[in-house]
Length: 237
Picture (cartoon, rainbow, N blue to C red):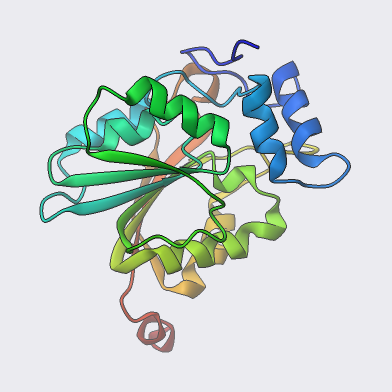
């Protein structure tokens, strides 16, 4: 089946039949991570832009990302991997991780001729053990894809996978008014509640002014620093 993704993005709510099908695969009768693989196998991927996220392209050109001395970046839930390739560059190696082998196969296929500054891995974010920790992790439509009960575990993995003083960038899709998910209702406070106890501090947060049209006004970009000693931070509060 041909993918339902379009370059301009899609509305990620129940008015979109593709989103309704995703919810059937992921959440009925109970939440199942295996459903993500079925989404890719059926070509039902309404979150997939078919190109790098504009905000990622902007970040890659900003000169504010780690580079040099073999800086490493992780993109969990990378899907077809467009953002992985866009973030890669001289001195910066990017790993794209996805639970779906179909998504990873697609990523490897289209990106095969683009260089060796990135790699794709098919594995479960919550159990995967990389050979080394990362300088930077980039999250987009990943946090909001999980049932809210899984968010503390998401935060714990982010802390476990980052180097001390590493950075987490969250491109937040702030869905609201959803009776079900994914995407699940999400606020900035939802991120803060699970990340702050683990020593993450927001260094900047702003509206995503280059969001694709169906998502304009619903996204913010936050950059978080993982403090090397969160206990010191907590004791100071």
